[in-house]
Length: 75
Image (tube, rainbow, N blue to C red; front, side, top):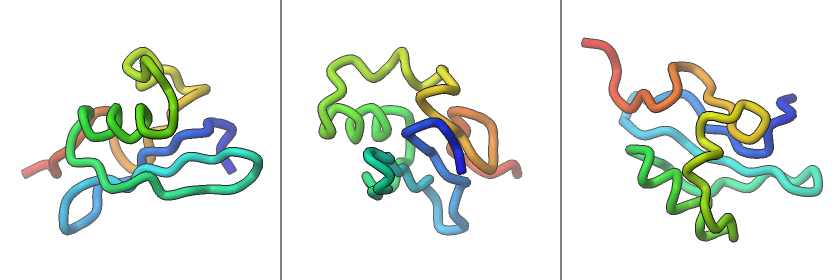
């Protein structure tokens, strides 16, 4: 289990990456993101006023199954 409360999961075959958040040991799916803007919007919706600086902080966001900010599969 990760210590980061936000996880951007691996790219799905149909596109997009699932984004989850954990609080009080409960994981919640925030949505499927297709770009960084989507992730930022999900985080704003859960009450994080300025989420942009968090995306590159591993203790806040764990990027799984690919590089951070990767939204397309390699051709």
